[in-house]
Length: 478
Image (tube, rainbow, N blue to C red):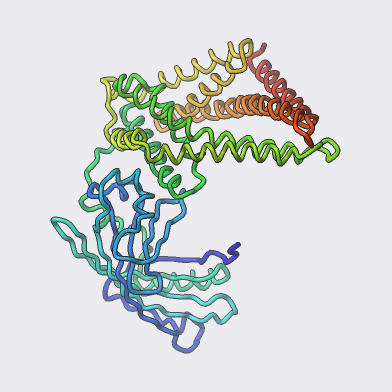
């Protein structure tokens, strides 16, 4: 494991003629700091429609120094993907971006030449040495109309133990005229030529919905990149799918009915594919924990190995289906549809209603949840699962409407989350008990195995189910 502490950094914008302050003085009278000058060229790539930039991603190929190579930064939720330097975009990165580029080629959109002079400033206190990097950057955009821009930045790098020295040097730079870097020239240049998108009008209920839809679509597409690169993004991707499906249902009168229904069906399909993997992960963690809590004398036979192996096979089979789905034409068409819905969802006349109408949608979601919950305790266990889904929709509707309804929506969301958690425990315990009964039956007829522990665990799950149902009855006054 890498235990190297993260560096402490600061970045400043300065004018081209900016004069560095006396670095010797900042180092407490040390000899002149060491200096090294390097030059590199970085070319950024995107689709013609600037899809990477729109999703907060960057793809760059760098030449000329020790950091030469390709780098895909897909955002905070997905670790960066690196590849060795080469003349063309590596196949692995092209494949990772399948859902982003949708058949479009990745082409160069910006080249930045960076000339950097690095000053190593020795510490006089035994802390990590500081490094000041004085960068001159010259950029040229590509396309029908090219833009040439130059700017200069100062970057400070130190260790956690040198934060005081770094802060002091930062103050000296500000006194000399440097300003904290709050905006990115690079981001501005990468956005040039992007297709203009209309900002949602947050005074209309449709604007609130469009902003929420865009957020979920972007999460799903970033999840696609994560899935293609082996990241653990099944859960956040499924959550975004659920949020989007919830919006299509609770706010259904804002959309073209036929197109919304068609999208909901496709989202449900891919959510079920991902669900097989996630269900195995959740159940494995749950049963591992419960087994660990049992006294050793109650664990008869290779129970842990049996459970772990069964669920590992289930997860592996699920991952095979996920891999198949990612390259299925049906899924690729869904990604095309999502890109379109992100900025231009097919809308009805109700889209332009003012935001107070959001309260009616939230009220309807709350009413649906209470109706399902009220009848669920007397019905089949699956009825409580339907109530749980309604709780999720109420929670997500609260998230969507909170910018308009404020504390009222926030409180509704918190209550819905608590009920969702309680109903989720009931669902997990129900699924777990069914699995344990099946595995116990297998163990009872397998040499070297014993069904006792499975029965014990199943009994514990039955107790949890009864406890949840009692809590729900108390909350309903039953």
